[in-house]
Amino acid sequence: MEKVGSSVEAIEAEAEKILEEGRSKANDILREANEEANKMLSSKLAVDEVEKECQQIINKAREEADKRVEEAKKRASKIKADVEKKEEKIVQRIVSNVTGVESK
Image: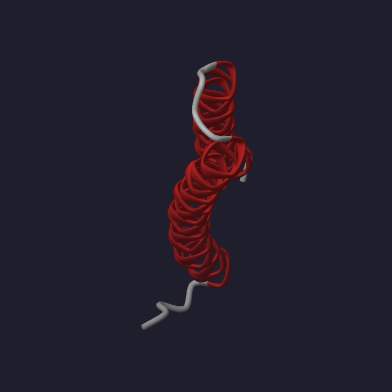
């Protein structure tokens, strides 16, 4: 049972790592968008045009960041579901071994 617990913990840690990577990438995208917006603001373009373009860049960055976070969540969820299936099989096997009854 300790092996199952440690495997679950390892998989959960991996899922958390994937989520953190997604968050990190999202933050990088937003930071780059803000840097680009700042560059545009410092140029001699019309303010309205710059603001509009900045907002488009930020919106695009947020969409991309949200997409990456959602993908990371899906991957983490799949990992968790796979672990739960494996746990159930292991528990059934242990019960079968203890009771002497084969499970299907």
